[in-house]
Structures are given as structure tokens and as C-alpha cells.
Length: 430
Image 1 (cartoon, rainbow, N blue to C red):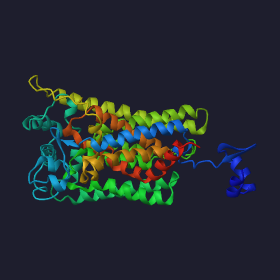
Image 2 (image 1 turned 90 degrees about the vertical axis):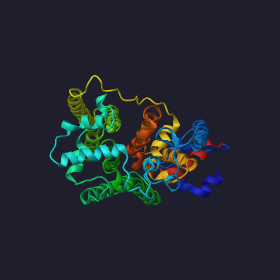
Image 3 (image 1 turned 135 degrees about the vertical axis):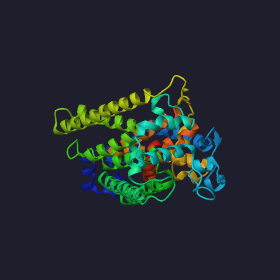
Image 4 (image 1 turned 135 degrees about the horizontal axis):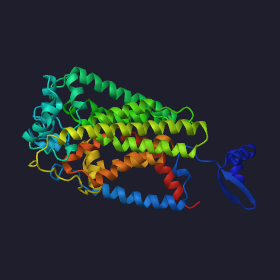
């Protein structure tokens, strides 16, 4: 008991008890340890839970260091400094620069280049896209194999022309990146990040979002949709039990992401589910009514997208021939390698060898899970959900799907010191 009074003081001990901490005994006296900070999730965990999670994490870190990063037809991807060969598709796939890297275009990107060029010359997207995909030996069945036209029209308006300089598009990419950084700096500050976490987290957001400035991939749908999801996450606020929440900006950014790439749908579904959950928990209060309004807005967005997608598919179906082959299945069951490959190859982690890049992805997840905040919970569910999806669906040549979540994932590293320290402390015998 004397140790506790020596640390907190006799008067301060009563405040610790009032605030609510963990019970401890010293002889006949009972005192309370100071409560863990509200934003530190693992500091409150029971010892058995903490020990179990540490064992699981150890296995994941080891596995992520051993699993190779694969690309294309399953070949092991190398860091760009090793893989770069003029005209080598695998080198291009990991976003390298070097001899020939600025000249050779991937077949997917060539198709998007052609669509943009024909729109700029006054043609309608649906008048040529199915035939263009046939000419390039790309499937048109099922209809979702044909991309939504949104980005093609936006790029045509911004003057995107292959890998050539596109000042308007570059300005838009810079503005979007700065918006993501600003939004996340505000959210980190609003949700309890310490000064060091705020600085480190903002720098990490810049590291993740900087990939959006790669003009080589301006025609890639996942590049823009992923940046918009990162912006939506940064703009969203739950508020104090629903009061003071903000979601309209996040809704608008997510709507544009969904219009560009249907792979943004899991994010929208998660936001709708979480808003509905808050409405249920806070029912009968002002916060509950605000959450219900938000859930309704997300539901409306899902309905609008379903209608737009059905219209898109009907146009494509009218042009499909019985002789058109069915595209290969996305059900690939790549396991942990699929998750890691998508994230690493779609981010600046591609410069690291796989035995370092894989554990970094796992560390990001640990950091997000350890941050006890609305942002931490949403990010953990979002990134883990996409991770499971990448383990189950998507071939090796679909690695660029990882760009849907990679820009915002990096900030999780800012919370790793807190999460790891608290988890180890919680696992120790008291």
C-alpha cells in the first residue's frame, strides 16, 4: 500500500478509486491502479485474452515473413531494384521506374488508354468498350468484367493520355492527396492521438497516399477509388454518442469511389452496418436518431449503386455474343499470400523484400486494433475484411485490388508501440 501512496499521494488515491481502475490488494488494504487511457484498447484486456492474441500474432508474423509475394501467373515478385528489366511486365506490375519503365504499358492500361482516347474523340463509351475488350482478348462475360465508365470520362476530361504528362490530372491527384493528409491529421487529433502519434501518423498517411501521384497508373480505377476511401475514412466522425457526428463529406467521397470501382462496396456496406448498429444501441436518443439518418443515407447509396450497376450490366448484356468465353473465376483461395501480395504490390512496401514487407502489414493491423477509437475500430474491421476477401477471391494478376485500402493502412504503424507495449503488459502475471 505504501508504494501506491508513494506514487499517487494519499489524496490522489481517492481520485484513482473514483475514476475506476483495476483492483489490487496489499494486506488488509484495497486500492485501485490508475485506469488505462481510454484510447489504449489492450491495456484493459484480461491476461488470457492478451496471451492468446500474442500467440496468434507471433504465428502471423512468422507466416507473413515466410509467405512469398506473388504476381502475374504466380511468379515471385522481387523489389523493383532487382526486378526491373526493360519491358518486363512483372517489373511494371510493381510500379518500377528505370529503363523502359515509362514507355511500356501493361495490357490492362492500354485498354483503358484506348477507351479514354475514343471518348476524347467524341465516342460513347458503351458503343465501343465491349468490342475493344474482345479485340484485346479480354472477357466480356460476366458483365462486371467491363469497367464502369466513370473514370474513363473523368480522365478524358482531365486530358489523361497514356503515360504522358497530364497537368490537370496531376493537380487533381495532388489535391486529393493533400485532402487525405489533412483529413487524417484532423481525425487523429480529434480521436485522442498523442503528439508523437499525430506527427508519425500524418507522415505515414503521406507515405501511403503518395502512391496516388504515380501518373503511370492514373487510368487505374483502384488508384482513385482507394484514395477516395482513405479520404472518406478521414472525414468521418461518430461524435459523442452520435452528437456532433459528421458523415456527409465521407458519404460524398465514398459515392464517387463506388461510381469508379464497385470494389468500394464493402466499405459502404461496413459504414451502413456500423451506423445502423449505433442507431440500435443509442435508440431513443438524439444520437440514435442521427445515426439512423446516417444509416439511411448509406442504404440509399447502396440502392442507387445497385440500380446503376444493373443498368450498366444490361447494356453490356445486350452486346454479349453466345460465343464470348466466360472470364476466369475470381475464386482463387490464395490464403495469406493473397492478402500480403495485394497490399505490398499496391503500396510503397513493394520496395522491401517479402520477409520484411509481410510483417509490416501485420504490424499495421496490430496498430489499428490497439487504437481504441471509432477510427481504430472502423479501420480494423475494414482492413481485416478486405484482407479476408483478398485471401479468398482475386488472382495473382489482380494484385492492384490492394490499392483500395493501402493508402490509409500505413497510419496504423503509429499505434504499434502503444499496442505492443500494452498487450505485453496485459499478458504478464500481475
